[in-house]
Length: 285
Image (cartoon, rainbow, N blue to C red; front, side):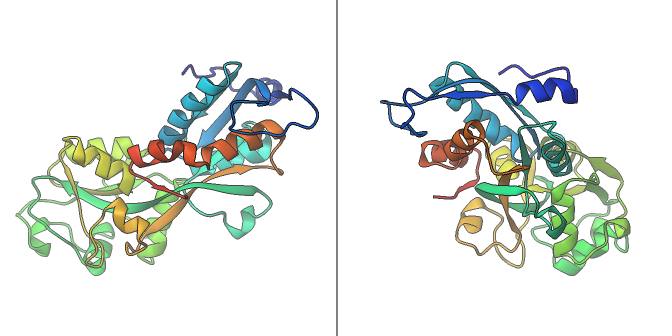
């Protein structure tokens, strides 16, 4: 899938003119093979790095069913997804959290569910950490692994950058102000965080459970720590026993236009449940 290069409001305004031409006036969007609408043009999605890989795969499948359509997915964080949707810079924003009260002017559509997991290097002897220990580590009251039962080595604290919903939810759960977190390394997307932890045996971080579980099951040198005695696994997000979970949402500035709605409906349909599960997220149906 090619990415759109020139990110100007004028260009995106032109992109937003995705046309919907039905076979007859009575036709409505349908996944059936007969009497389906003809879609042409481009939809641009920007935002959450957690949601972006999933929507890229959903976009490819959607393109295969609508040869005249291109779905351009770009990450950058949930804050970007909100801002771009509001400003009309993107057709659809992607966020990995609920809307805030100040964002209720936007329309939100859940496509999957995920959780947030604390991760360490696979060779780290630590099997679990209490909430208090995690807070102390992230505020540098504890700065050596031996203080929490590990080896004598400095703890490298990896934190998410401002504007990332994963940071907001992590801080909210542990009742921390983001300014209280004392990071040694600041990362952006989940992939960067996972690579950082896998490359440093003394590091600790937190990322999407889906992203972490997928990486760990594919040989990346990380392990997910349980939370409050519950294993960090997407199955426990699905059964609602894992304490930090969140919706993965698409957002629009106003009620979706016909082209936006057709894609959003597809992204929320059982037709993509296999893609959601392949990315280690929880389908909504």
